[in-house]
Amino acid sequence: MKVLIVEDEPVAQIELERLLKNIEPDIEIIDKIDSVEDGIEWFSSNASPDLVFLDIQLSDGLSFEIFKSVKINAPVIFTTAFNEYALEAFKLNSIDYLLKPIEPKDLQTALEKYKGIKAQFSSNELDESIKKVREMLNYSGKEFKKRFVSKVGDQYIKIDSRDVAYFKADNNIVYLIDKQGKKHIIEYTLEELTAMLDPKEFFRLNRTYVSNIESIAKVHKYFNSRLKVDLNPDSGDKVLVSRVKVSDFLKWMDN
Picture 1: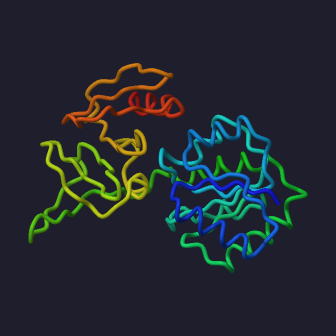
Picture 2: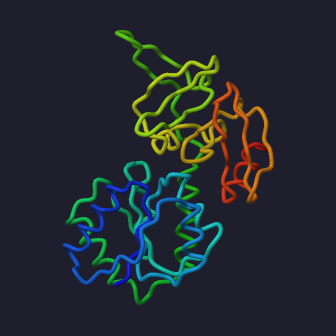
C-alpha cells in the first residue's frame, strides 16, 4: 500500500509513519508534505497513492483548498486536533477522520475501513463529501472567539478580537499585535486561531500571519503570481500571500 502523508508538524509526520509501520509493515510512505501549496504541486505531478492521510489545518490554510485546484483520485483519511471537525460527513465510505493525538486502535480501524471500501472508491463521492464538510464547517450559527487573555508581568489583560490587528508566529511563539502595535504572547497556534476566528474578519495570509481585514493597508502584485500585503501597524516583514491563496484572499477582501 502506497501512502501519502500531508501534515505540517514534523513530529506528527514521524509519529504517524511509526504507527502505520507498526500496524502494516509493508506500507510504503511515498512522500510527506506540509502545505496546501506543496499539496497542489504534488498531486499535479505525481500518480495517485493508494491512500492519503490529510491534516485539515496545514501551515498555509485548510487542506480543503487542495481540492479546489486538483482532482484527487484516492481515498482520504483526515486528521485533526479539533473536535469541531469530527463531523458525520467524514463517516461516508469514501473518507474517514482521526482525532489527534492518534490512537493506534483508531488508526487500525481506519485502515480496515479503507480496505473494505477501496474497491468501490469513487472520486466523485469524495468530491461530494468534501463539499458537505466545507458547508458544515462554515455554518452560520458558529460562535467565534470574541476576546483573548495575555499575561503582562504579574497581571492578565483582556483584548477584544475587534482590537486585534494581526497574529504573528515566530518559531514556537504566537504574538497578538493590537491596533496600537503592542505585542502580546498568547497560548494558541495559528492553526487553532484560524478555527476560532470569524472568517469574515480574519484571514490566514501565510504560514506566519493571520490578519484582521481592517489591518490590510495596501496590496501589491508580486513575483510569481503572489501578492504582497502591507499591514497596519507595520509588521516590519515582507508579508506575502501565496499564489494558491490569492483568489480566496481577493474574495475575502471583496466580501
